[in-house]
Image 1: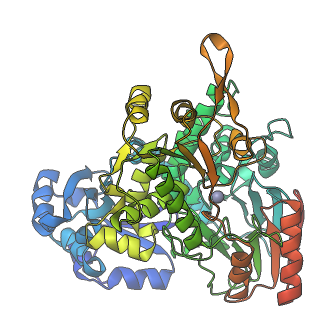
Image 2: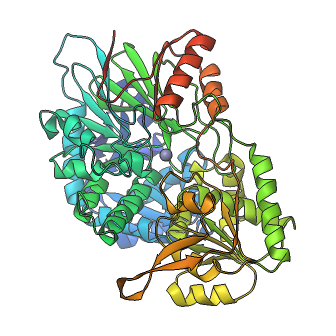
Length: 621
Ligand SMILES: [Zn+2]
């Protein structure tokens, strides 16, 4: 440190090192100092003013508003005198940050506070607002958690032994309940902790009890690849079992996990099942989240560094890379991936400094699991919509709230802009609107050109005026059903409940109307039954009597909209991977898919491959 800059305290805050100083302005003037400290100490460093030297918030507010350009659209300033941080919420965070952080430095130089920037959601999102408010009220608790996590990460290594093990807890030769343990002599890391729908009668919570083994304290860290329930549903349950450590994920994954797990509890309650945990545990989980951006190399244990990379699957989804020991071993977990670019996301990253072992999803790993080209799928979708419009029918599409819905919104918005289908209202029902609002809060996680449109041209396609949020309940649905031609996107995606059931009642009986399936319909779901020709379905009648509804509407299926790589995509991911891994574990697929993919990769690329079962342990080194 230069002699004229004082340091009053150095604290751990999760993986970061926080340096408190009485000279925040000099620190900021010395542009290169933080970078040099970080590279010398090989730590992420944050500088904050000592509370003694803080200017009053009223004064600082004036200075900040002076520095930040008006176009940044600042909507809120939140001063935290305990840490010297000011959280700036703005519609255009980039303008608060400035070129290479120049505006941020200027804020500190002028106001003496440490700015942190968050985006004002362009579409009001109750999830984002609730998570931010909750974390604000829990600041004290959270600081204690982060300090404890920091001490754990930076503890001394105790063992001279060297090994790396992976234990499979779920999602092997099956789809659902993804969960793994990565362990070294120093550290045990749990990767994902999901549910398997329909497995209620099987060994309950297999992963959780196995994961915690000798007790909750045997796990050092939890890493979550993405928010889908087959990866995240039991994360809150860990806290009920006494886990008290960090959950590493991206920021959108944290928010989506909140949305999806709360809905999971809601659905369980409506179906008369006792959920395995309550909403208090979801809040605990959110409180313990440490969010990382793609590409941040982060110490999460004395001998493990974690890096997230874009996985192309859903918002915030990550391929997770673990660097173990100092150059000892490297493992990548694909999570769920889409290898090619989609309308929403860039394709999955498969470029790493080093990888010896890859744990690869195999959902569509079977030898015939090829998907239709997305362009062909889109053409067919528009054709079916045009036909329905010409005969005066309305279109209803069951869709998953996260991912598929936003993809469809982009397809439909573009088709209307280019007159490929008539412009008509697109009604969004269920959680789709809220999930879309979360997407617009994190445009940096979307595909390049989509992000650029949102940033630079104020052409946010999600804000197109034909999109309508159904927030008026049954009455609004009835009005829509009696009104002009339109398209309805509604949850649930497999017609297992939710507002789609109302839409079937309102639109199902008329022959002119059109139902279109765009997503996978699992065996045993109502969606699968309708798809395979059922034209009479049971609906909940009044007085507890089941009534039957005659479906006369036309039913079509359009394949090819998927968040998963198909067989070709999975092979391409491995073939072009840099560096080529020595070993591949094929997981997250049924028995046939995992074995097909495993033997194909072995024959084509001459690598050691496995299709493990649940509860197997592999030792490397
Ligand atoms: Zn997924």
